[in-house]
Every structure is written in structure tokens, then in C-alpha cells.
Length: 253
Length: 300
Ligand SMILES: Cc1cc2nc3c(=O)[nH]c(=O)nc-3n(C[C@H](O)[C@H](O)[C@H](O)COP(=O)(O)OP(=O)(O)OC[C@H]3O[C@@H](n4cnc5c(N)ncnc54)[C@H](O)[C@@H]3O)c2cc1C
Ligand SMILES: Cc1cc2nc3c(=O)[nH]c(=O)nc-3n(C[C@H](O)[C@H](O)[C@H](O)COP(=O)(O)O)c2cc1C
Ligand code: FES
Image (cartoon, rainbow over all chains, first blue to last red; front, side):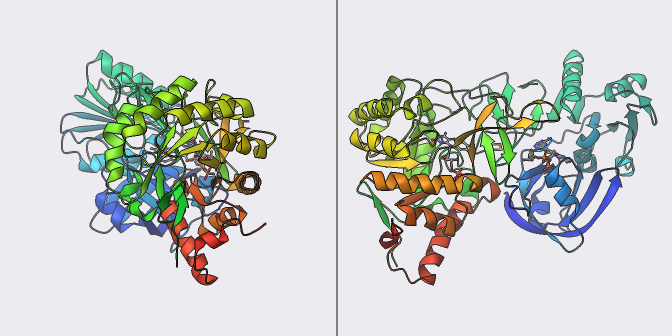
């Protein structure tokens, strides 16, 4: 069940240039959250009326903690980055469907700011896991991603791991999987969608779009689907409600 | 204390409704509160067949507002009747179905189909700025507005609300055209045509290039237009545009609106519409207003 919650900031820290980790006490949302879901965060500045969707990086049901890791991309996230211990943040969540937990040999692929949701997913998957994280240059969340399974890194500038993208890292290390989970920029997701198709691998990708309601009411955030959707009766699904996670074979990127 | 208002003989428990397109058919928001807290729920615009809408990005944030170009994506009237109306019937609130179309025949087909359904009002959207055909083509010319109003009235079994566009030179003339052609109620404002340019990508923020502006930034324009429309006609007016609080709603009521709709504010706060209804009661208590109807158009 999604709820509105006034969360308390436990602490906030910059973990890489322009990338912040925000730890919140948000009991109700943490209790319900599954990996791959997101929250809507509202701005205090009244001139910014739309919620900012941010993925849940980690949630600890027992202690009611929620961790978000985000990039300062514009004015809203800049406002967020100024929150400090004891401040309040207005959230609605958990939103969206989340990743299905399949205990097969898996790839967890994160590209840039698509990496955070892989942290909670890694904690909850039971099968053999290989994590492939793609960065521009500066690394973050590598400690969390190294807790289980094996972590492979790709950097655009070659400063760490494979020089290139996540698929280059997969090829360079001769990796194979039976299920793929991916979140990241659209070109990366497109390449993974094609890779999964070629190799006939079950693949789940997490999509992004501009959102207004965040709960499925306004049809701002649709993506194209191959089949007619049961809810919308056209070839479109709502990313905020039916996603953000989709089977790679059901959507057109 | 009385918060009830009457629109074309139908009584609403309070003057607060939702604005079409911002509230789906209520299902999503019913996870937050009982829709029975509202005077009425207004559905997303529905056509005779499913419409795919515009490409994304469909929305952009602007200072204290937003632009949208959803393009009237909707699942068509059959789904509305089979799925959404039975759901809404479970709540103690009135149901307004917002209707869109490309041709006069499209509108009439939906209106006729809804005549036997449990719908309290029909709201005819002749003011959507985001689709090429239909919509606004009917809403920017008083003659075209009169003609479609007359046609729709022939088929309608429920009271008809004509939803007016603010993208006109003289809103009074449009309001009178709707009244003269037999509209039972008018509602306004729909969104104001706008544009946003992404200077970093050097492209339009919306795939549709232009979009409709809504939210708190449009409120003064909306209050002015509601005031002018209410003075131009005798039929009741439903006011909307940027309402976020009970105090915002009171501005519209004092300007002449019998009821109000809450739209974009639902995105900032899923409880917005309910809180507007509560805010109106708070205002009434504060100023010891016995009957909300005594304040409709009280500022001359
Ligand atoms: C399901 C989902 C999960 C996300 N998870 C994360 C995450 O874990 N970490 C992270 O750093 N970012 C994440 N994003 C992207 C994040 O929402 C945007 O970076 C953020 O909204 C930017 O807000 P702003 O005010 O700083 O930027 P501005 O550009 O000033 O924002 C203007 C408007 O555009 C919207 N917007 C801008 N960029 C995006 C975008 N990429 N996606 C959707 N809306 C956008 C904003 O919400 C706002 O309404 C996610 C997006 C989605 C849809
Ligand atoms: C995302 C979105 C979708 C909308 N869809 C419709 C629609 O389908 N039919 C309609 O008549 N008006 C539609 N509108 C207009 C609203 O009902 C309302 O007239 C307008 O947004 C002004 O009110 P607000 O500022 O409170 O949102 C839409 C507005 C938004 C923001
Ligand atoms: S943001 Fe409103 S439907 Fe997804």
C-alpha cells in the first residue's frame, strides 16, 4: 500500500561528485518497499509543484530506514541536497512494481545513476549473482555492490575495470546469465534489450519518464508496448504504475 | 453549516470536484482517501474509441505550474462504462464524465451511449489545446461552440457542462454562446497554450512543441475569466485553474463559481482535493458563514 509520509532525515552525504546518499527514517514506506520501486519526493519550494521520482537504493524494514542515492540534476535535486539531519522530507511511496525476484544465475546491470536500485536487489536475490556497474569515470556504491557475488566495473575513460560500457565488460569477462536486471540510460537499455533477445535471456529493464501524478492517474509517463495494454487499451503502459520495471520483450524503446 | 450546492438540479455535498485528466477515474486516488469526501469526481476525457495520445515527453514543469500535452489518451467509452463507472458508483459522490471527440458525431456518439449510464453530468471538452482536430477547434469560435452545444444537447440525458478555453479574446462571448445554445452549466478554465524550450538540448521540452499550462501560476487568469463568465450568463459556473487550498477555492466562489475543480494540485499532494473541501469548511467556520451559497458571486 502506498502512503504519504513525512520522513526524517538521518543523514546526507556526498558519495561522489554531485552524487548524494540520503538516509531517511520512513517507517511506513520502508516496510512495504521491494527492490526496484521508487518514491516521489516533493519540493518545499512552492514554485516546484511536481514530485521528483527517486529509486529506492536500500530499505530496512525492521528499522524503518530508506536510502536514496541521487544525482544533483537540476533545481529540485539541488534543494534535496541541502537537507540535513533532523529535517523533514515529504514522500509518497513505495511506487511502481519493482523487480521480480528470480533465483537463477543473474546479471545485475546498473549504468550511472541507474546503479542505486541494484543495491537492494542484490540483497534480496538468493541465486548466483554477477553485478556489472558502468560509470563515466568516478565510482560510487562499489562497497555495497561487492557484498555478495562478483562485481565487474566498466568506465568510459578506462580509469577502472573494463574501458567501455557494461556490455563490453560482460564480453571481456565472458560472462553468462539466465536472467538480466538492468537500470540506466536509454542507449544502455536498448543495447541490453538487443543482447537479451540475441541470447534468448529473460530480461527486466527499469525505465524513466517525466512524471506528474506518480500513481497512474495522469498518463504523463507512458512507454510504448508491443501489445495493447489491458488498462489503457492502446499500445502504451504507465511507467509509474505498470513499471518502472518491464520485461524487455514487452516494450519498444 | 451548509456546504451543499446545486448544479442544474443536482445536489453536490460540497462544491469541490476534481479537474478532468488529473484524477484518472478516481481509482488511484481512492487508495489515499474516500472519494465520498468530494462533491463530484470528473473523469479523464473519453472518446468513442481508444486514443493513443501524444508522444513523450508529455509534460514539463514551469514556475509554479506545468505544461502538458497528453493528447487525450483514453481507453474509449466502452472501458469507461464497464470498468470505471461501476467503480465510481461505490462512492458517495457525483460522477461527471468528460467527453472529447474529433467530430461532432464523435461527441454525440459518446453522449448518446452514456445516456442510460449512472452518470450525473456530462462535461464536454471543446477546449483541449493539445490535439489537432476537434477539441479546441470547437471552443475558439462562438458559432462553432453554439453548434456543437446544440447537437450535444439533442442526445444528452444528463445536464451538460460546456468546458471553455481561456485561449480566446472574449470569454464572455463564449460563455453566452454556450448558454444561448442550451448548456446547463459552463466550466473554465481549461489550460492556457504555452511552450517551453530546453536550452541545453536546444529543443522543445514537449514532444508536441506546445502544451497546456496549468497550476498555481494560472490562477489569477482563471479567477478573472470565471468572474467575467459568471457575469455574462445566468447558468452556473464551475471554476478551476490553480486551486490548491480552500482559500484558493473561495476566490473562485466569491468571483461567481458555484463549484470548483482541483487539478494540477493533485500532483503536488494526493490529498489536495479533499483538503480543499476541508479548507472551505475552515473558512466558513472562521467567518461564521452559515451557507456557502451566500458567498457565490459575493464580490461584485
Ligand atoms: C522511476 C524513476 C526513478 C529514478 N531514480 C533515480 C535515482 O535513484 N537517482 C537519481 O539521481 N535520479 C533518479 N531518477 C531521475 C530523477 O527523477 C531526476 O533526476 C529528477 O527528477 C531531476 O529533478 P530536478 O528538479 O533536479 O531537475 P529539473 O531538470 O529541474 O527537473 C524539472 C522536472 O523534470 C523532471 N525530470 C528531470 N529529469 C528527469 C528524469 N531523468 N526522469 C524523470 N523526470 C525528470 C523533474 O522531476 C521535474 O519535474 C529517476 C527517475 C524515474 C522516473
Ligand atoms: C495532465 C493534465 C491532463 C488534462 N486532461 C484534460 C482532459 O482530458 N479533459 C479536459 O477537459 N481537461 C483536461 N485538463 C485540464 C484540467 O482539467 C484543468 O482545466 C486545468 O488543468 C486547469 O486546472 P488546474 O490548474 O487546477 O490544473 C488536463 C490538465 C492536466 C494538467
Ligand atoms: S505520472 Fe501520472 S500516470 Fe505516471
